[in-house]
Picture 1 (cartoon, rainbow, N blue to C red):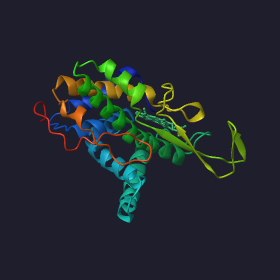
Picture 2 (picture 1 turned 90 degrees about the vertical axis):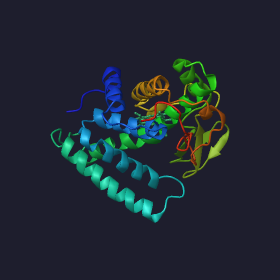
Picture 3 (picture 1 turned 60 degrees about the horizontal axis):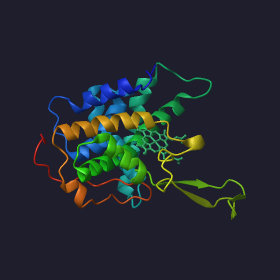
Picture 4 (picture 1 turned 135 degrees about the vertical axis):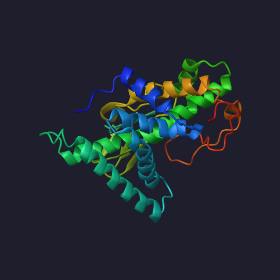
Length: 251
Ligand code: HEM
């Protein structure tokens, strides 16, 4: 049975991941690997499997990105088989419930990791950029800036299942509506309504721990704030920090 992902458990798990013996974390790891490992740990994945968990989740996410190749799709299929095997074993004791079959529970669990991967990388990355730009080490101010003006998820999509009128605009069955989440209203950064993000508190806790760790370890060079490149994406705003060199703290 899974324990609830409370802020305390989440913060503890993030710190455990950040301080694993022998860690040599890059900024890219802080964006992508640490959040996935933390959610994995909260889901009961054994510590020795956390590295694989990141590889499998990344492979799955890559295949859903624009421009994915046949090879990406093959790698993703293999990765999803591994994830399903892992969670099949881990969740077996919970079994199925009248509401959810075991297959659906496994798919939902994999979905949590999928949702964690890019969105939290954007949250962490944009907060690091804001921190570098301000240069005052104020983490709360950096996150406030991100949520006000630098949304990690810029938009989401809906397809009309019947003819409707949206505002004064007719939308026919099957047509696509793009909902902009990165606009001026800062209360929808985590979505809204039925599909609003259930991971907001977990993601904010993880991101705070990571950004605090980066600041305290001297891993936020000014350069991050100056020339930011972003990963190609139709809806996520994720700074690409792979080529950033840091002078201190990198191990
Ligand atoms: C631990 C990290 C996270 C987890 C586990 C998580 C989980 C999820 C899940 C399961 C959904 C689908 C909800 C549904 O369809 O009913 C979702 C939706 C969403 N998440 Fe997250 N999320 C995480 C981080 C984030 C972050 C950092 C952001 C951006 C600030 C974000 C923004 C959103 C948005 C905008 C939606 C709604 C998408 C839509 O309506 O189409 N999430 N999240």
